[in-house]
Image: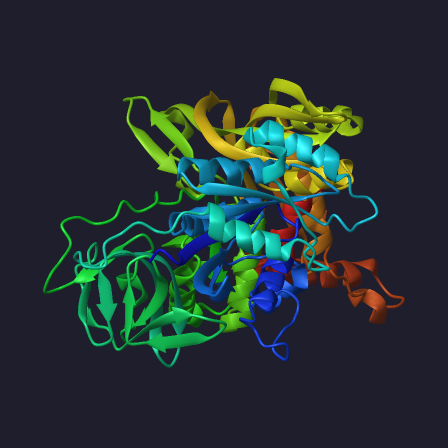
Length: 595
């Protein structure tokens, strides 16, 4: 055990984690040069296309130093704020981490957020300044920022370039010297923490774990403590680039188990594996259950695909534990699921993965957050969907979630960023300079205001320089009302939203204008209305497609033409009563991008 090191790499998005992982794998000859490619651990097409890590990946490296062999378990992590849950799972399975900071950009919001997560878990931190080969690098300034942040000695900071391979030997030496070996007793009853799982159509569910105490052999009868289910360990092994079977894995190591589990509900991330014959006394303290921030309805385009959508979401939930879903139904869209996501990027990725991995084309409704609704009797209900709002006459008040947002930016963009946050009903709580020209702004903002387009706007007004991180701080009373969209007098529940009184009329007007562009013309007029309760606040009309029916009535008495027009008018009226308006998927998405 003294020669095992478990570590992860944490950083802000785009600071070079995946490239650094590539170099470590190359240097330790874990990956053959013919198999080597950029971002070797990012095995999803989606990760390569977008240049981001979505899943945390684990891999084992063998490193020889002074004739002694060390086993290094690297658990790579994502950097985007929407995937911070993946980071917390990786950190739970490690004893140390590399904190990577870009020499051209310095310390960013997500760097600080992930660092605090690592410090809470008492991890040994090795600071690394990456990209020092870039022309725009300023490593001395970044070094000062890291010293101020960590309070460490400047000599402890390693300067490296993941692209050229400079500093990689020093990083490997620091991992061996500074990160402690895992503590645990190989002779004690088995205690293993599940930190990830993945569905394989041929072998069932593959569960990844870190052994805290004890030893597991191939063929052992094990049980999962939380679910109480028992399984035979058909295969156990360690995680190289591909699965590598072993006969035995002991304390301190990271590995996988295959036991033919078919039902995804039987595996919970954070659960403990133990032996049936000699069980451990108590389960390992798992990490907290994740709380979704953004809710949206996901519906199959064809109603008969409902069960397929359910099984696709269950399989996706296996290796994305942050996704939650419950069945719901909508008048306009039929049966589907109310899904909880960590943010808009997470929602987009889930939608994309459903399409690519499971061939499920879905309609997603307008995302919203959860509100606490108090009635006149003082009872509280949580509402995730505007359709679930009680009658306004019964509501005493509504509370909405507020977040504490931290934005790190250059001083040049301070004005536009403050304007943006104030326009989203934000309250500036703190501003302070971190170093030189960079400052941190802290705001309290309603979560509902940042859900849709805040992050995109922040990036565009700061030319990509501002970094953003947040956590839920509290619920506060707010003047919220339900805005309904009616098509020909029929409410479309999938387009209704909860919004602040001050924004309701302008939002209603903009939604009507947008829908007028997107809804195809029919044989009759379509009235698009925005309503607050019984009061209509905006209206647009999609004009009917007309054909000149009186063209053949040339000459003669005008009453002939009038008779024909009246006949057509009656037909159109009947058509309008039985006709339904098809709302294209584009319309649901366009509401998100009203600006």
